[in-house]
Image (cartoon, rainbow, N blue to C red; front, side, top):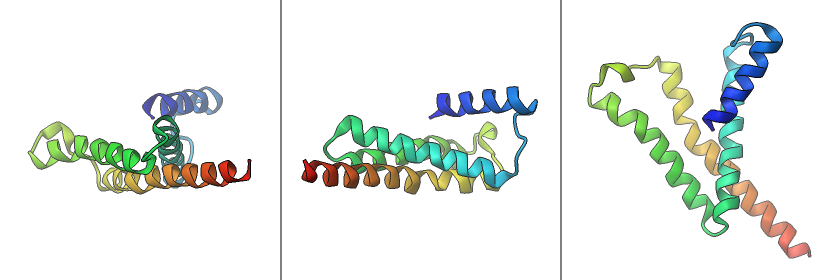
Length: 111
């Protein structure tokens, strides 16, 4: 997920000359789209129980940020908007995995 976001930021910075040329909601949509795609990729790689694996991976990702903050680590104090964005990663990855599984089953039933 991070590598895809880095590529997107490098391309936007080379085109616009700034890493953050758009409004905050634009970047929020890009981050959630990246999470949806990553959830679908996890579901594709696992094939069985893809939604469960995507949920566990998203939960692990969020806990990697939440646990140090709750423990009081000074480097993990992010603004509120970052925590809201991080909270949306779990449903976004689950939506990606679920959509992939539904589409995969529909296409699998047709052939």
